[in-house]
Length: 264
Image (tube, rainbow, N blue to C red; front, side, top):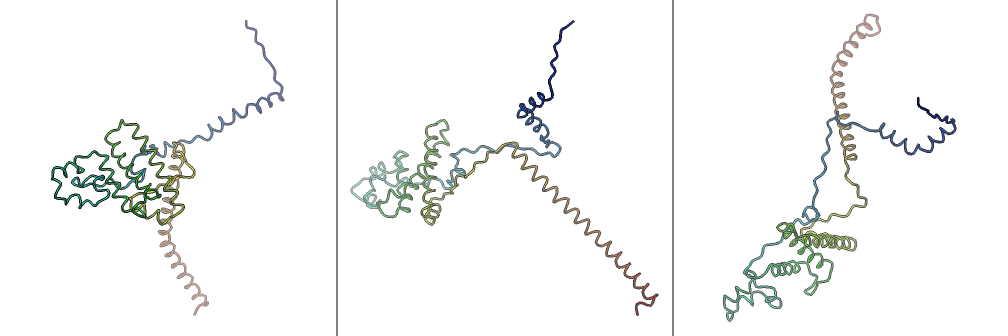
């Protein structure tokens, strides 16, 4: 009823076709052969939780913004004179002192005073504002203020981007300071309460396949150690039995030698 056309392929052509498509066929065959099932071992893989790059645990900021005494005057009133000279003046009324204090100042003025206090403990001299330590200290105050802001205003994307850029810039400065002066680098981390996380040379992505293979290796190693410990305990129990048999055999040998006159 139907006209079918059959083509006969010579062995040489078959070999050529297999050789031509081996790059497509063999990987699939090998993938089928190399597949492993982990259900019988009850190994489950849960992906690690995602941590934001702005999180203090990831950025290295262990410390927080210090608390301020809001009765202190603003920085512009105590920049060239001490705070006591401003607060102890009798010709200034208490209302003026209260208005010029940090209590009625915006948040930026409070951050300015905090930055000045931190720089006072890190500066190499009074006018130092361009050294690596001072730049890192200023960036640290900015980062911690932005981290506090992003916690309350989660939709402020621009602040998150600026905070991420500041963290990357501070890490690059810390890396440079670590190369040129390691002692000062350690001293600065202690002063600012920071933890430096160096960038890894090779970034290994966390995948399900790789994690399951690691878990399987740990499981097999643990099972091997458990079986070895069980076998050691079994051998320790056999030692007692072997010692009894050895004592009985030595006693029998001794009696036989006495009967044969080989032992006095």
